[in-house]
Length: 414
Image (tube, rainbow, N blue to C red; front, side, top):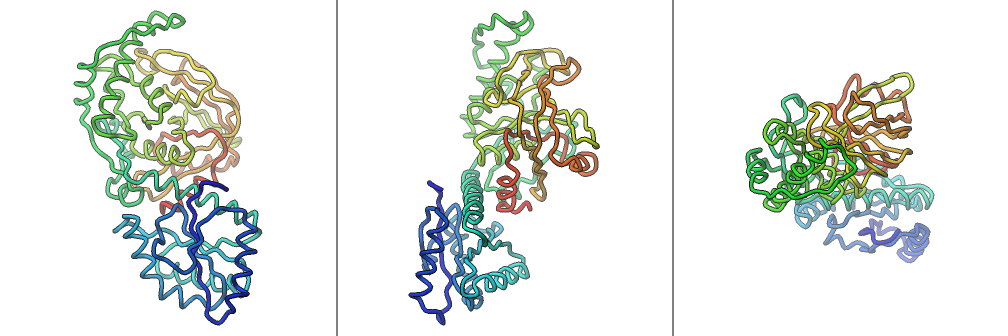
């Protein structure tokens, strides 16, 4: 495990022989095969790394931890710039030697009693190394989110009556700033942006006529991104149909592929889900809504008119489904493992479920990109029918439930 910012701090009872404890420490940490910065009992920079581990080396350390706790919380908040935010979880590493597991259990119980979160990391070396790697990746992703600026261009679409977000909670939990940008600012930017010639000989006449305008929207959005120093945005894209008689589907597909999270319909929770996924996995995912569900088999059909170009093996241009104008994207993602992900706007809950993309399809009566996915656990279809987080969900290539669960816990969603 390389290039992980992991720090290990120690808790040790004075009753134990330091020489013997140090020997156990060398053997135990050496068996994990991880790279780390060993801090010992110097907690001066605790809380500033992607992952800070408290290595409980012996029993009899419960009182030591209790005395240290206020300083650990203060140091972590001050040095990481998270004053006022909810405390990070405490990760208690233990070998099980010298009653260290028992002490860790007492410490974790105390944390829980006092409204704090934590986890004991204990088991075989391979398990511990794997768990530490997940937590370090989640911690690094959390650091990447801190200070991000995400734009809401226009309000959420009128039909997204549950897809708003609490800006204060988003700032507190993620360190992300949400900034509202009037739709008129984008329309003015489009008007001021020259239209470029686009050569797309293989498309229909309607698409060839629409492409220059679709690229103009892309160029105008780039101006907005630079002006507001955005790392992502969600767009009230349906307003473009009536104002500039084109769509943002092409622009969103391009921008997502370029590393700028770009969401549809002003859906803020979907945008946040995409940004979390991008920080963790390097891709923002496919924002889509379920069109059909089979509760007995776990088969679901997801569809939308845009998909990031870096997620697909090939794509075709078509018109936008609902309006029949502009440029929509029909993308074909590689069949195989996928993960469905969504966080709520108040970051109080999330949905994470793995499945298999069994086929792409191109029926004319649906949004242009269509994916048939079979959930690994068919019973999870009940979430969509009984307690969904809005309609849009994010489809990610690969199985990432364990990793997404780790960052959700780090953020405080789970």
